[in-house]
View 1: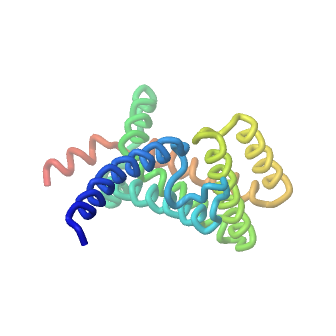
View 2: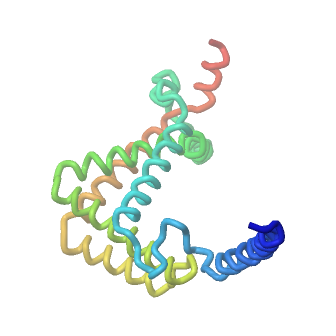
Length: 203
């Protein structure tokens, strides 16, 4: 084995590596921005990946909302209940909606889940529809550079309205929203946020 041939081979490899790296870089730039490593390049969407993504989004949103909640002991404090004056009613409701917005979201979710659990088939149907829409949105956004066309938004809205009209999910949803509105309205009206903050400051 000659030293000259080994040196020539090493020189050839040193020239080949930059070319290979440049080709790989150009190939990666030619791929769409929405094409991830775990996404098939044929435009298809893995159902299990879509479902897991939707579930993770729901869990992340729930955890974030729960962390943003004010203490529930403060939320249910009976010392903060008082009859509002008509002149300051709007200000009180606005303040409570801002301060306890995360708590109110938890209450709305509680009513929705609680009402749907009264009918297990409706709850399962709502879950299936949610994951189906999530998968459809993921597929369409993958095909349209991470943008959901207006026509697809219209299709999704029509499907949701059709399902609500043909099933009892609509009545359950209305019941949950009415109960949520009543609960939030009562708390926002009779809860005096300044009283709670004064009580906390004096402890």
